[in-house]
Image (tube, rainbow, N blue to C red; front, side):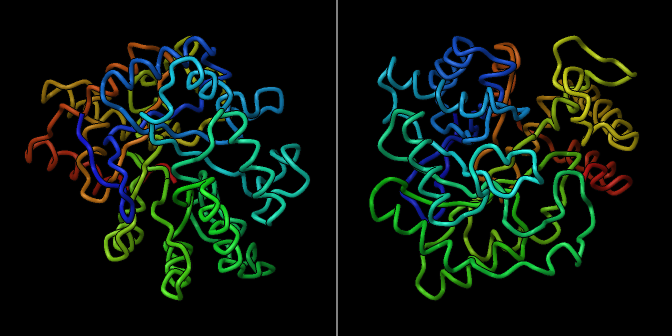
Length: 346
């Protein structure tokens, strides 16, 4: 395994992070424990979760992922061997409204979310606590263009949110704070507050893959100049970059087969680009998942690549991608496809 420092912290995190959102839906508690056992054995010391998981969201499975991680900590005693990240649910377009009365980052919501996560996770502290997505409207989750109207009523409360989070840092309940599904504007607003003396956001967790590279346009510059970590999720684009959905295939038990509304990466242009990337991987003697994950692993702005799997075979291949190096010739072939069909999946 390879390791890197999470910026502005003393935490050495593995370049591969274990994503856990399938625990509690596609994966049982026993299977989740097996995945965590194997990941830790392979040197993966960074696990990511969220209070809203398992995915897809349902109230009957909400919190199960954290609960399964907590039962694994209790069983194995491995809490101090893991750098643990979780998230508070933000505004959710109505679908998460049953988690609590107000889906915001108010003092009451943060207090509710943090203490429930700590209880489910059976731990006294969270290493990285992230805001799952902003309170304001942002063009993510398949939305390409920014909508000026949606934010007409938003009132900037970034400073107040940081003040609240800093209180939990001082209490020792969370060690560091980060963002998720955030834009260059949002990150810079948090950096402005940090310059005034407030606690710094140390990371941003966004979707990033061969099919979704828009953060290279603006956010990657902010990450570099402000020394903020980047934690890409969905590096295989809901499994589309495994190639298993090509030629109209719908493999049994696969995520997009089970949940057809997860179509963000399944447009005609995305599948066309995927086929072109599959040809490149084949030409250079790699599987498409190996190439897709190695590409993300090697980006200069990436701190840790959040992988996820529903089978042990998938998990083993995903973690093994850390040992794959992409040649300059292969990278030029990838860039040729990217220039022809940039960011087909917003």
